[in-house]
Length: 75
Image 1: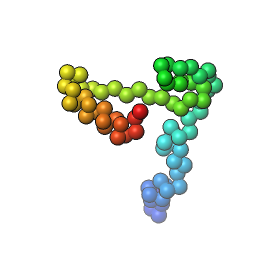
Image 2: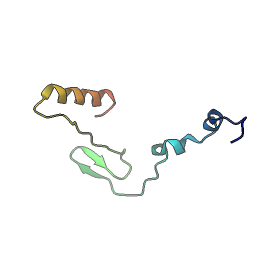
Image 3: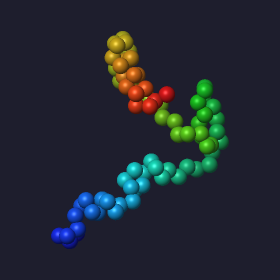
Image 4: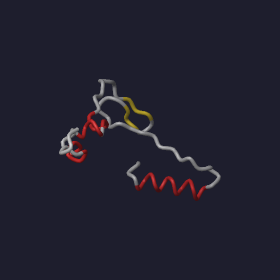
């Protein structure tokens, strides 16, 4: 890297799909199935299951984590 070439300039010209690989996911063909009410495979959106990491006996903490997931966009 030359003295006149900064990291910021390098970053500005980068293809950001390489920085965020989830934007360029190549999916293989598969059959769509249902797991309960959720479609999986085929052209269904990618599904991620979330879990809390609190003691379930601590209902307030568990509910707080569930609300955080909702605020982040989880179903």
